[in-house]
Image (tube, rainbow, N blue to C red; front, side, top):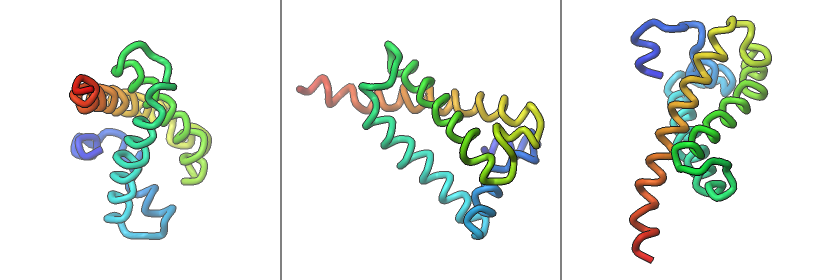
Length: 124
């Protein structure tokens, strides 16, 4: 998110501003909400659902999870934020860019989860 903002890529796609607006709160609360959703909600959800997520490796499971999170964002969050289904009021780049970011997030989540869970699994 920070790199996207610094590069000036898709300035109309400001998730922090969307979250802040939806909460009626300052930008700091948007950042906090985004962090909490990404770490606690999605991280915890991934750990709980790990065995049920399709994919032969942690990397693939993470990517599948990231795509599912993206789909939820496109169907629920974007319309609630006034951006329409799949954020189409912002053009085709919005869903494409967010899909790429969610795939990267999911891949990192899957690999990180595997690295953190592997020592515990090996100890038993």
